[in-house]
Length: 114
Image (cartoon, rainbow, N blue to C red):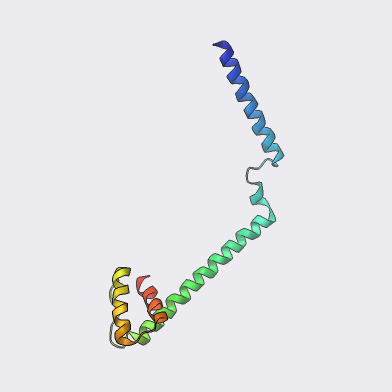
């Protein structure tokens, strides 16, 4: 019993010393790669991409609103929010009746469901 305890203590101490050696060779930081300039520029690129995506979504929303006003608002007031599937069905029916293009339909659908 005493031998098992000594053996386990020895194994735990060895594992801890290996962990300390690995940490020391890594510069003392688990996230050393995050501290590099390349990682900082990658984070800036991610933020730039997020800003572009947000701007693109806003532009599509505004374009959808403009298409709704030019194609639908002549006859209809803006309806209350419907489920996206229901709104898609309504737009498909109105696309045939009002000669709405496929691109206009997708933009209006995005505008009406967001």
